[in-house]
Image 1 (cartoon, rainbow, N blue to C red):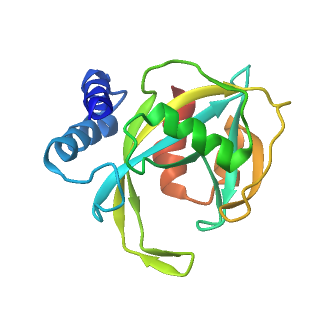
Image 2: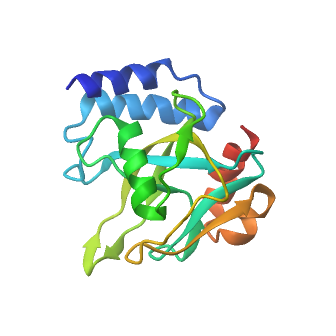
Length: 186
């Protein structure tokens, strides 16, 4: 419960970068105060996720994975699954999805927030209905020399991608135009 209060405070203090973040912050806070099971997938309408924008030392490349479900390169991340300490969650997700363990937060603060629509899809043979991810993004840094590995049940490639080539690698136009371009500008 203490971690959930900390998360609320972090989001309340976050200064939105643009109108999308301003509107999404309002809605994320509304969900935090009004919805039940917001940290777990028990909430079938909306629940918390966390993403990593992992850059190399000179900020020219971003670490991305080719996600099997979406058939596209995308950032790393995952569901909170009941844990309000999203920094802890993202470090676990980064290691699980890429094998990367030598990574550091560029800032302890939230880097970005966004509400991400998820279309209905199948995962491990089970249909998952459309829902929203109330997403918090952290900025992290790692070396392009660090060892990487794929997580075969989720992704088939892990790659350092030049920031100006993300639009060529990601087939999810909404993410490229609305989210990844914003993160690159920031």
